Figure 1: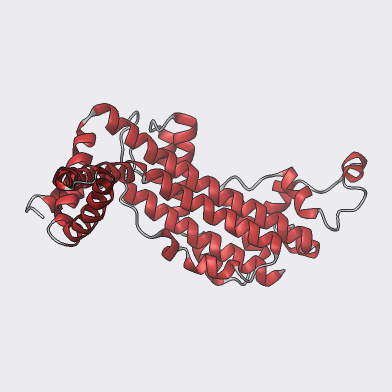
Figure 2: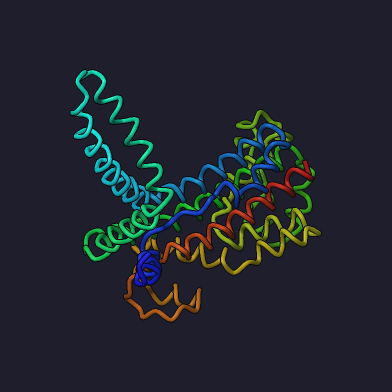
Length: 310
């Protein structure tokens, strides 16, 4: 690798995600999923797929560029062997012979000097894309949408786990609604006859569904209040829900969805960020990875506590 390559790599990664092994990061979640009851397992696996989908989506520029570079190098080897195969008298034997030798030599090349050459070529091509205004804008928009997708995964996980738990353990509603913030949020002082009729006059297996219809868990305070009340002694869950990154994730998501990522005074007041009002909120891929990691840990802990309670 050339001396400049490490610097190019750092510059390129401010715009394009070079993915890590998400399956390894999510191993605690997948290990946990194998022992969950069916309904909760589906929730956990959907959460895994959603977060993995974020990594896949943000990795598209890298994977496309790598495939393009890899193909160009491969075609060079294959073309050379096809030319050499012209010396084979039987035409039907030429292509198989050329493919066999090209594959062997290309594999040797990638294990040797070609490994660094391919890395440098991928970085160079990504840098070219970064220097193109339209490609840069598209990459930045892709990264911003990654934030939206991460929050959506966490929100859906929190809601579905809440419904699953209270449908199975309606008795937990008592401690949930003992907290004034939850009682006010879910507004369940009275239930009308039409609502009861909709549930067949039996909320014993539908209480979670009923409560979430009154107020969804669409904000960090709502998620913290609900799970804090449901699991008051779960110190690890409380610690993860208090992670500042969850708050920042939600605030960035709201700004992107409602203000197209244009910084306003409310965002600055909520986050303490130092960007000027009117600036575009650009997010590095590494920041999305960090927010995703926080979401993954929070989601895994929620599922663990719900499983233990169920």
